[in-house]
Length: 166
Image 1 (tube, rainbow, N blue to C red):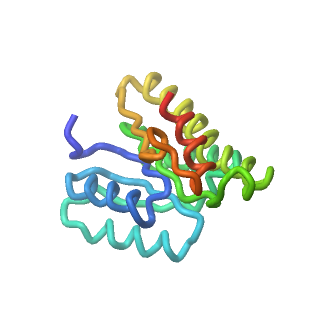
Image 2 (image 1 turned 30 degrees about the vertical axis):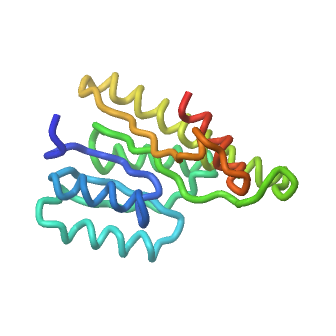
Image 3 (image 1 turned 60 degrees about the horizontal axis):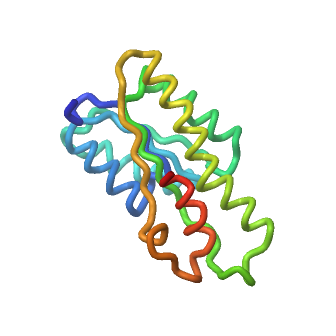
């Protein structure tokens, strides 16, 4: 299936790599939903997407991937907007930097929810919906080189993103 008329959810899509992916999809005609924690950043990104000539549509949803209720709301709202989903791009923002001595239990918990469990929950929901709809689809995980060659100051990212690679 080409990107034309694809219906895609890109998480953490208001800037950086997530926005770059959403823009590429929009340039190929996809209808895109992006999410972010900050409304003004999200609004700016959605406006950029909508200004792309071939964009099939662009929507923004404020959601914090560290909150299970937000993840559930994000997926439900995405289905309301798109009707079905052809592709899920699991991307996430940054987690605290530090080595084993510097990160707290709270940092570990937050990173677990933000990076790993949000990916699990979204993937489970998307796979179930893709199967039930009969449309099929793709799930893509944006990770980090740190899962292959860890760096000390990115401990939380290295550990949680490695779980997504499994």
